[in-house]
Length: 305
Image (tube, rainbow, N blue to C red; front, top):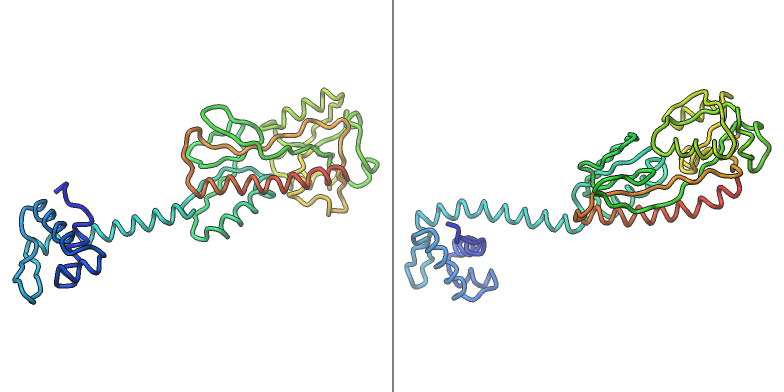
């Protein structure tokens, strides 16, 4: 039975429905001799005749063996058609994609990526997971955003530099850039010591400032609420400031720091050597485009801080 091919089954179904080899050949776009050859090959594979051929104008009829083969053959043809349709949808960009993200990217970059993907591929299935572990793993994810490069068997694409800014209550500091030394001993609220946060705090310390950390939270809105309450200022990356729309809050002020800590770097990762689905490949292209648009906002916004 390993010699049975889908084209043999398609010829069988067409002949059974049309009643003759000639009409089946015309429907399938073959010559009649080609259809006859396909049926002969099928009969050799199944070990018996699948049609009674009365000759003359009378229609051919399925044999009992032919009826069995046709019943199962139609199931196989339907599955093959469904497979072809699924492959076509996959190549067109439909299917599922799993993306790992974190707070700032979720607020600023990812919404545009998701919207554009869904506009282009309405049938796609996008799954997002937001975590900020100290040692992230890509696991079964197709793509992973992270503020740094991952170790291991992964490839990466740097999307943008995300500069750090000082967010303080209105009137806490004079307008314009703030010398880093003014943060020495000042009360500060901050992220936990994960991801890029330790590197940023070490850079601030090297600049001669050791703020007094009075509260830590991984939630940007919580930190900003504490800044509004007067508990302390916060040094946050531009994406976090932009995502929370801080400049529109008249209770808060955004300042550049002088000297400024090195910016954190936003990367997109995927497993090394993996063939991307069309959907994942397009997601990388869109993420790159969106990051370029966001990066164009960074310099003017920080310059006017």
